[in-house]
Image (cartoon, rainbow, N blue to C red; front, side):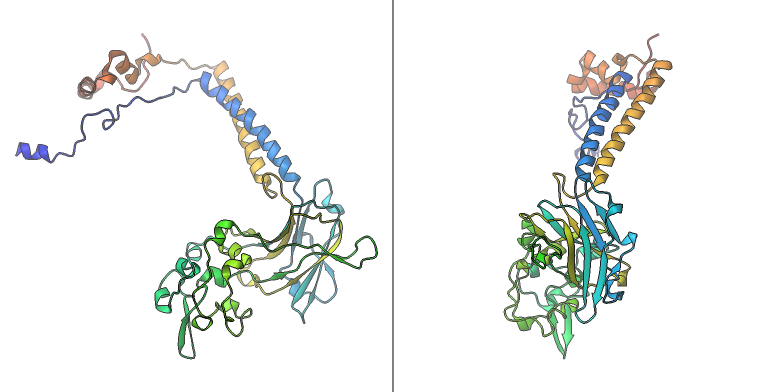
Length: 402
């Protein structure tokens, strides 16, 4: 019986690796090592934070909310202070006239008028911004079918009870067909149409000048690879429910290539926070000259149903991207905290220093000095003796010299 129990033993072999006796660096945290570390981190982080904050403040950005524009009349009305933000480098935002909006009910179009007091050098980007929209919900982020987006034909039975549910298929006049594209993400796609800004008071004899912006090149190359032309025929599928205004009679033949619709690709990359912005168009060549601009937005997307808002954002960039003061503030806060802690610990150490023990009495130093660390059998024997006599000393702790 003893031989059987030995054969079935799960005890690991007596090696340095399996018995965790490999050589390792185990630093001793003393005031001489900790205090300089705090000050070095503070000296490095604080200037970097100031540099990042400086770069963020040089980014020019305008945000204008148009959520309730459809409640306005046909004449321009000034917006409240909470409905817009100006961050223009070197210009006091309080001196800029308030943006104005009006609504054309016949065309379902909101006209946004705003003053741009300085030229914006390229690159200039136009985003739409949504709030209180939780694209990061677990069920929402999974609500699409990879094979369907890759172009493969997926029947209603294939999609049933899958990730696209409950927007996987639809029955109409007794005919059940799958949605293409299926799922919550595609169905909730942002569908307001934003026109390019128009300069209404250009210099010279021109009545107005459109600042041309492109809607191509706004999606990541990785997102383009995720969507291929579909193998579906126009009569094989239904458009998602919220796409019916775009395709009232169903898809034309052939079905449009979703991989060429960069607005769709941008929307399918879900955001991590409930307040987010997504790129709509851009201009990488021309300067957006100062003046009085108007932007027309065809309003199709309802944000009031989920308590959210929608805005347009015109922004430039820097080497760190868009305007983001949080990163610089975080670096400054960490640097300042480290310097503060370093000062507190330094005062404590100089006025009431703590007596340190002799590190040569540490258990691993004793093993190295006696050669036990290189002799597994002797180390195991020594370990056994130590376990048998726990009162002889505390392993791994410092001991004071007598």
